[in-house]
Structure formats: C-alpha cells, structure tokens
Image (cartoon, rainbow, N blue to C red; front, side):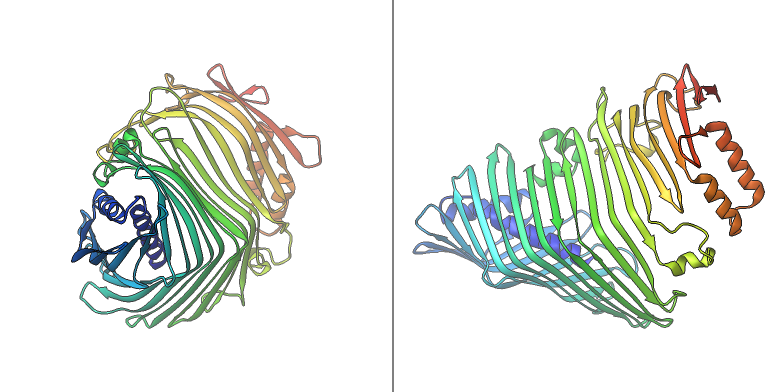
Length: 503
C-alpha cells in the first residue's frame, strides 16, 4: 500500500508543478497552477504573494483535498519561487523537503486512520517554456525520497512501521495544451532506479515483517486529454466529453525479498525478474489494459513449507484485455490474452505425488489468445447503471481463437478456430447465442499421460477408461505417435465432431 500511495503522490505533485510551468510570466505560471489545482477538486491556500525583482515569491502554500468518503490529503509546500529567466522560460524552485498527511475514511478494524510522509527532492530542477496555450516542461532530480513518518490506527495509536521509497536520476518532460475546457497532456519519464523498503511489527501476534523491492531502468510515457474533477466522477460522461488516456510503463531488472517472523518461525521469499511493463489506454471507443513480466524466479522457505526451499520459475507471463468502453448498436473489437510460458517448479514439489519421476517435468505453458467483436447494450462505465439487474448487458457477435495451448507433464493440447454468433437464437444451445464456425484441435501425448497418472495412483482405471472413450468420440488419430486431432463444427443449428453430429 505504501509503495502505491507514495508513487501516486509523487506523480500528482510533479504534474501539479508541470502545470505551473505552462505559462510565460511568473504570475501566469502561478495562476495556471491555482487553476489546475481547483479544477482537480483541490483547495489551495496561500499566506502571501510578493514580487521580488524577477521572482514571484509565494509563501505558506498548502494544498488540500477531501473525497466523498471522508478521506483527505494535505501537502504543505511552504514557499514557491517563480523566476523569469529572461529567455521565455520560468524556473520554479521548491523546498528540498515538505510534509504530506493523509486521513482515511472509516474502514476495517485494522485499517489506518492517518498517515504522515515527507518528500525530499534536493536539487530538483523545474523549467517551463512555450506559450500560454501550449507549453513544454522539463524536470530532473538526482533523487526523490518519500519517507513514511507515522501511521496511526483508528484509536490514535502509532503503529510500529517504517517505510521509504527512493527514485534516482529522475528526468522527464511534459507538454501541456489548452483544449477549451479540457487540457491535453503528454509526458515522458525515466529513472535509473527505484527502491522501496518496509518493516513493521504487530505486537498482538508478535509478527515481524521486512520487505525490500527494487527496479532498474524505469521509463513511462502518456498521452491524454484531462477534464475537471466534477465530470470525472462519471466515467461514461467523461469519455463522451473527450477524456482519453494512453500510457505505458516499463522497467528492467527487478528484485524483491520478504522476511516474515511469527510464532511458527521465519518465512523467507525472494524473487527477481529481467523486466516487465504495464499499459493502459482508454477513450470513448475502447479500454485496453495489459501487463507483462519476463525471466521471473521466486524462492520460498519457512517453517510452514515442508521442504528446505521451493523454487518457481517462468520465462514469460502476460495479460492483456481490450474491450469496448461505451454503449453501441454495432459490433466493436475486443481481445483477450493470458499466458504463462515455460513454468517450472522444484523437484521436491513434484516428489509429493510423483516420487519416482514417472511424469515428464518439462516446463509447462498455458496460452489463451482470442479476439472478436461484440457490443455493450448499456454504458458499463456509468456508476448509475446497476449491471447486476441487467440480464444481458451486451452481445457477442464473433470470436477468433488465435491460439489455445496447454502443455504440461508430457502432454499438449492446441486449438485454433473462428465462430460467429446468432443472438436471435438463444434456444438451440440453451441460452447461448447459436454459433457457426469451426475449431481445430490437436492433442499430443495424452494417452501416455493417462498411463502415467494411472501408474502413480492419481487416476483410477475406470475414470481413465471414461476419458479414453470421450477422446474416441471427439478425436481421431493424427500424423504422429500418440497424436489425436479433431475438427469441431457448429453448423445448421447443430454440433459436429469430425463430421459426426453430436447435438
């Protein structure tokens, strides 16, 4: 929680500073900052404003925000100096450090009631240039540190926790443009490294926790159109009014460790990865979200684990979803991808159910890659729409199975195909729109896998016989040894396997 909170806080403050740069004179820069803050639903209070030569000095600056659930946020920025550099740019200087406080709405019994942080950014440089309607902004800092100072529970007791997050060699640019009542924003961000450390103790359970997390070569970019806080309360309305976002974040080598000590003993988790990333895009037509991770390795040991160590590894994992964002009367594109490639686990775990090594322990892979068309009958982003009260919020019109692959324990199942759906016929297939199309399936090594499962006592003989009979109904021999193929067809309101009508 602390890492997410710290990262979002730093980003919000940098964005506010970038907004302040988007003018020609110091006064216009400061006015822009105030407008950006109030437009986001925040309140800005100031003790004094005074022009001193080329510098506008603003003192006693406090930024606050309150949400509808009863939570609040405050940043005491103290003094801001806006200096005209005489070349069409304005330099903004801030204090090397400033405090942040958060108050949380009532929640779970063990949820915090408040939190205090300190942001430290020595040597931060903020330079803005351009025009009043389209500005550019450059920033860099040798380091940015966010330190957790205090957490209180609902009774006002200070929790025994400590945490900090440190970014090094931070640099980036912002381009801001006025688009009527909206604001266009383009950003680029890099950092050499990020490190997060957390420790805490629970006196009631005598549990100690220590977590360390690091990333290298961080990079992010975004391009979007921002609207005021009031309209953003209804995402469907915001999308129709022009809100957009298209962003990505990548990172290189990553490591993490977690050490937990409780009455049962210590538990240790350590992991690493060679890289990964996150993407998010949203506009009136679509929502696209994806994650990726490569070269991952995780090791676990502890009193609750019946082995000296458990090791998990995989070469690649990915998730991506694309879907329509708004109500429509015509089919829109969607896509779905999930995959885990070359997954392995320690031999000690295999040994629990296969001590003799009968099953193949080659890396396992699962891939589901599909796309198609469909549309929503309701605006799923509208908070006033109660989806649970709608029988069918959308329609599926087509589905392409680009790749289905399951490979494990010496067996492999693969499939590809394409289907279209008749949404006027919900009777033939008992409530599902009637499909038309073909799916081709290839199965390898399944008979050997069944034999092996029988040999190690996992699969009873009678169940194995039933599985073989099902394979005989739906599949036929393929080109290779222990290979089966099947062509599944939906046509003429029926279901066929290899030309034989099943339904």
